[in-house]
Amino acid sequence: MRISFEQSGGIAGLSKKINLDTNFLPSSEVQVVQSLINTSNFYDLPNNTGQPNPDAADYLRYKITLESDNGRKHTVETTDITTPAGLSPFIGYLRRKIQEQRR
Amino acid sequence: MYEIRHREQKWPHPIITIFIYHFPCTTAAAVEHKIKDGSAEQRDRAIYTLKITQFIRGQRMALAGLRGFAASGLAEMRREIYDIQNSQTQTELPGRLVRQESGGETGDLDGDNVYNNTGSVYEFYKKVFNRNSLDNHGMPMVSSVHFARDFDNAFWNGRQMVYGDGDDVDFEKHKLAELLDVMGHEMTHGVTNHTSNLDYVGESGGLNESMSDCFGVMISQWTSNQTVDAAHWLIGEGLMTGGNALRSMRDPGTANPYDDQIKNYRDYRPDMDVHTSSGIANYAFYLACKSVGGRSWEKIGKVWYIANTARLRHNSGFQDAANHTFDVAGSLFGEGSLEENAIFNAWREAGIDAEKPDLVANVRPRIIMR
Image (cartoon, rainbow over the protein chains, first blue to last red):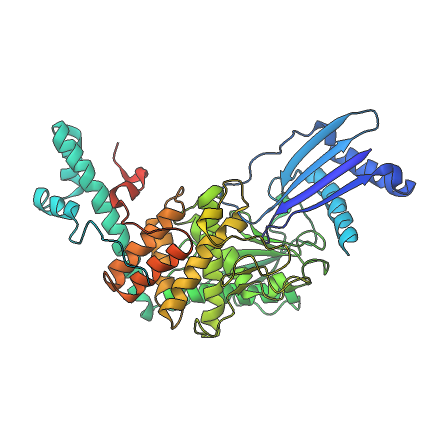
């Protein structure tokens, strides 16, 4: 499975991106990823989780795309303001992967 | 130096003359009567009068607010600091209350920094512009610290400020909570929500962001009583591990290796991030302040405050901002004044020629009687 994660906006207006392929992750981590995807009901989420409160500002925007080895593909776009509770841990994991990459 | 473009209309504005001539003893009821029962011509004229009356009243209130500050205290300041305990879930905001007004220190570095910075921002708006909190009605100023884990952001969710800890990879840890201009930036989003309410997209979004930077930088300068020459004009100095600051108002686009801010309207594209296009108005503000000299909040800051709170609308763009700041400077300091010239020239350097704004079109539609 391939995971593409993009983060943009925020007070800095910075864009950061990471591409992961679970075939190259340790199996223990693949289990973690799978459980995060299941918890979030990722494939049942809409492509866009909705517009943030129009009064809000400086929130980060996220775009996650999953593509399984059998070709199933789904993209979800969300923000700090509109992230569904179940998706937060998965976004937390993906942000940490970006940090590891940039460290 | 550039010449000021000829201004077509001089005060007393021709519309004001119409108003005085046709409605010598205007009351809301009389105007309403003309709107309901008058001829088509009377109705049009009455609606016109209402718009102008409302507009002048708004201006007068903004100016009166500025004059009346000396006697006011800070008695109504209400701060609330919460700990969201590393949760990234919006519905869990604000989190656990850790400190409120007059409460003792929490011992948490970020919580106490945010408490103190909120106080400085409140004090700035109160003492300089006689504004009582974000809504000017003393609303509590709510902040949550420790949002998510190693989170490189601070934001305004439309009701409160939210702070991450920083990850020491891109943002230094604890800096978001420590920096006064970051707090000034976030709280100014709240002020803008309650006034011009600039839409957070396109040109109005760039202006919204710029207002937050302009007042953020002014608050830092005011707190240390800095002149425009002594100030560094940076936003978020020391925040980024790999750069000087988040943004530079003196030289947009140079604060860090990722800084892509523009400083001229010719480079504007509608799909830009609002933190990129905000450089246009940041640069105009900086140039105007430098040209006038002294302290930013005393003259040019006052013009920007009136523009944001009494002139700009939700869909205003950079041209509107240039027009209104130019016009407000003319009203406050006189036509052809140093300040008015400085603002005209500053916007021209940022790629926009200020024009006399259409004050009737500017009036918010919601005040027109149905």
